[in-house]
Length: 137
Image 1: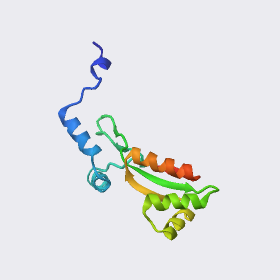
Image 2 (image 1 turned 30 degrees about the horizontal axis):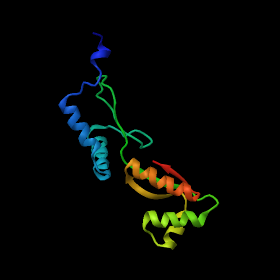
Image 3 (image 1 turned 135 degrees about the horizontal axis):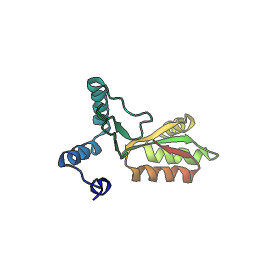
Image 4 (image 1 turned 60 degrees about the vertical axis):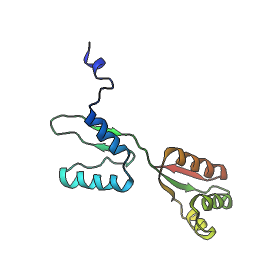
């Protein structure tokens, strides 16, 4: 059997446990871990902030990537139907009408932070239906 065939989906219990812990971290815990790795081990987070990247050991070990599970929903434009977008932003954020208007006029504006992909897609669809543009980060 070749090395490629034996390398498929073989993870140690320790790797699975650590991976599950990382995947279930809150945003605050992830930030603390990032700061700890930087301060104690000199490991910098990957640029872009999309997925968590960790550098392997200097002896040639590989890098591990964890799939992004939390997203920020950022309003990038209100398009031609500002009033419709303001109403949707008000409903999504629970802000007052004036605060929602300020958010919309102050694009880019973060509407939701650290939400699941499903929730982020739902918010994106609502805003786009109203005429606005949204980015998931």
